[in-house]
Length: 254
Image (cartoon, one colour):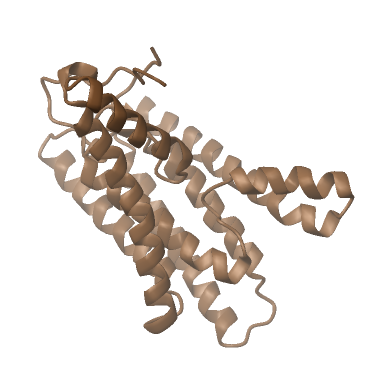
């Protein structure tokens, strides 16, 4: 059982915007909702790559190249999204500027395009392959996971869930033995932060499915688009008021 995870921010300051637990919830909600579109339409979880990696190896050894291609390209698309975002963040930071609004607005713009393609496919454009839309969503997920990876100063995942489940239950059981944990804060607080992220994943999946099924077919993509746009506007407003926006640097396992 892990006892600590990593060091966090300077507690003398409030959490930067993208490290606030409510924002962690919203980012996870976005991922859950996007998967609510890709799962029924492309039969994959586009933000979570564990299954795609396993499938790639599974179909590779069987020599089934058609089934191998989709999960393999999904992993590559996710990686390229992460790499692109890394280059984008580095470029922006070198200019002494914040990258959060840029990433969020770019996410919103890309998801809006994918929602358009999803709509065109629904109304009869047979030339649009849902797998290609899923590749694009994987790319966006790679961007999001790379840019926003800390919650209340602690590393976490907002596009994949395994580590979050591990830490939620880890701190829950630690709270039974010792009230105070990392940085003098209650273990149950840390557990609650991770459980809130899990709730975001589940709520995004459920609400995204309901909207897509009964309200608007592309709703599971448009809902994360709207969230990214709103968070981007909040980031601009916070930066204008000289509040911390980007995630803090550092974070080491101990």
